[in-house]
Length: 268
Image (tube, rainbow, N blue to C red):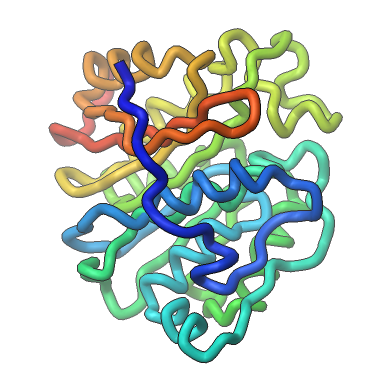
């Protein structure tokens, strides 16, 4: 049974001064993704990855947090802005891109310049994520964008190297033929049990996470049967999955699943 976890803090707009998403997006989703990243100690952070980045706000926030930029913004009152372009309907994670990013604590140890990788299948989303990073002062060499399906082009180079992974998949149960379409439904359509995209990503997540300290934060809803996700990840890949945070958003409950490897990844 998944524990109802109280929201940890404040939303990103109020605390960090970053404007995220387009007008009309769900603030409940935004708050959940942001609140999830403020309560864990990470031993070391060299590499982060966001799959399906949309506007790139979670990764930009994370980069700012790690660089100490976000706290400075809070002190001097200057806000940072997301790129003001319009995200296309079929970009991954449209409307939810602020929801995952508040789980990094002040006790984090990082390299001088951690590398932040973001992926999206849509070229416009990649362009906007890159612009969001630039507008928020993140050096482009530290913010690597890759247009690809999930993390397919990064698997060879980043196997067992990702310290923090963020993923907010299309999770709404829909007819399977809506998954990956060119219409607006692609931003939420998850197919049977809302799991088609998530299930394809699970082996990649297991392969990418650094052992033993890597952590993935993945958004799910009850209709996704997250207990099945947890069982599959444990049995197939030795990845432990627990509910890290849970919040009601209008007519659904959002849960952030925290995934941590218990052994070095090997092919199954």
